[in-house]
Length: 208
Image (cartoon, rainbow, N blue to C red; front, side, top):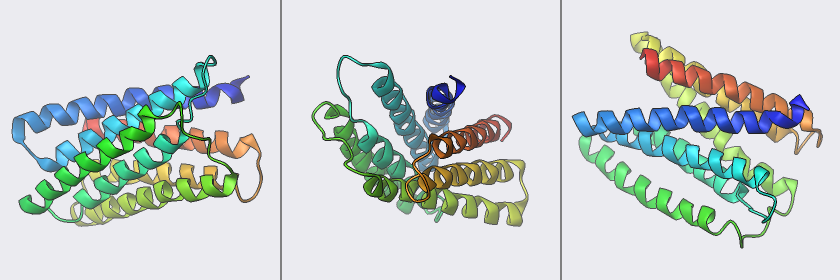
């Protein structure tokens, strides 16, 4: 019973935390016009939509919604631009990154709007391939914040490093189910670890 509820609980936690972070980021962007804040806000907004789509696909039984394409690709795009925004602080770079982020995010929404007609992901091997970039990108973000913490030792960078490490590790555990076993236990364990990562992410934004 509890095991079957874990994905829905994760989706609710994901939606709640990422929506809050997106709202806060856009609010701060409106005040100080930092492209990095806009990129974070848009990334969190897309991730919130992936959680909402995933939740809806599980709860709505009258139609079949193939939202996994949007979930994998939308989250990968979001994590990619979070990572890229940390590489350089130059205004021209950040502005260009922001424009590309908007374009690719809008393109990823096509996968959401066509969820009714898209085919299901055909096999576990393809799911493994689609899920892999999320793990790798979260790890690169973890590494970036770890480097920032080693340099300045701020609480924000420490919490962000911890959050993205847990997210990366959670995605890795989920990927193992396609290689080692098809047991739901790997999926549930990965979801629990990701929830811890999301809570750390929330703490970083609140306390940072």
